[in-house]
Image (cartoon, each protein chain N blue to C red):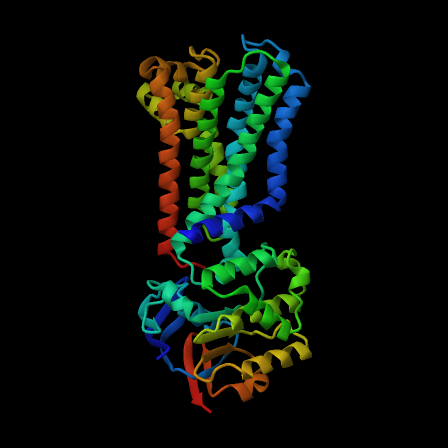
Length: 275
Length: 213
C-alpha cells in the first residue's frame, strides 16, 4: 500500500512542475478571477445574480473544458511513459503493477481535481468579499459533482492510456471521446430526435448515459429546479426522477463509469505487454 | 539456475522477434549478448524482466515466472537501459522511488555515484532528464550497482560515457561478486572481453552461437 502513495506522491510532484499543470490551474483560477473582475456576479441574467450567477457560468465553462483538459493531460500518463521508455525503466524495479497503476491514478486525480476545486473556493471567497448570502448547499453539491466529473474522465483517460501504445493515437482518441460526448448533450439530442424521428426512449437513454449531460443536468438543477435554461430532455428527466434522485444519479453514475473504465484500463495494463 | 528459457517465442506483427529460443544462464555467468539490430537482444532482455507475455515456451528467472512473480524476480535484477529515459522526476525523487521500491539505502547510491565521480548532492533538485548524457548514465549505473542484485542486465551501458567514465565503470564491474550473473548487450566485445566468460550471438530472433570462454 505504501507504494501506491509513493507513486501518487511522485506523480503529484512531477505534475506540479509540468507546464500543463500551470496552464490548467491558470485557466480555471483565471476564469474565476475574470468573472469577478468583469462583474459577472453583478449581472442579472435569467434570474441569477451574485455568486450563483458566477457559479452558473463557471459550470457552463467547466462542462466544455474540464473533460478535454483531463483527457489530454492524463491520456499521456502511461502511453507517454511507454513511448519514451520511462515505463521500461520505472517498472524494472520491484513494484507491483497494481500499485503503479492506481498510484498514478490517485496522484493524477489530486492534480486535476485540486485546481478546479480551488477555483471554486476562490469564487466563494469572492462571494464573501462581495457580501450577501452564500449558497452553501450549492457549493457543497457542486464540489461533489466536480469530484465525480473529474473521476469519470480520469477513468476514461487511464483506460485509453493503457490500451493505446502511441501518444498520438491516445490524444486523437481523447478528442473523439470529448466531441462525441459533447455532441450528445441536450440540444444535439433534440436535433437528433427532430430530424430522424428517433424514439424518445433512445434519446433519454443517451442523455442518461452521457456523463457530461448527467453532470450538466445535475449541476444546473442546483440553481434552476425547473431546468428551464437547459432543455427539454433535462426537463423530462427532472420531471420523471425528481430533483433528489436526479442529483444522486448525477453524482453516483459518473463515479461508476469512471471506476469501470479505470478498472478495464488496469486489466488491460496487466494483461498486455507492458512496453 | 538464474535464467531458464525453454522454446520461448515472441511475435510482433506476425513476425517472430524471438524464434523458439532455449537458454540457460547459471550463477556466475557473465554473458556478452551480441547481434545486429533487430536480432532480438532487447526483446529477450525484456522477456527476462517480465515486460512481455510470450507467445510460446517457458521463461523462469530465479525459478519463477517473471510476469506472474514480477516483484520476487525484479528484487534480484538490476537493469540499465540502452538510452537513459527522459524521466521528469528530480534526482532526489528518483532516488526516493528506487530506495523505497527496492529497499536500497540512499547512502549506497551516493557512495556508488561518488566512485563514478558523480556529484549527486549538488544536483538533487535537478530533473533527471536535464542532466548530461554521461551524468544520467553514471546515475543509472550507480543505482544498478547499489542494488546488489544476483543478475545485472546492461544494455549498451557505456554508450554515453567518455573513455574515463568507461574505465571507472569497468573497474566497478570488476569488483562485483563473482557469483553474480551479468548480461551485457553490446556491439563492443573488445571492451568487455576481460569481464565475460560467455558469448551469445543472436540473429533474426534465434541464438546462432553460444560459446563459453
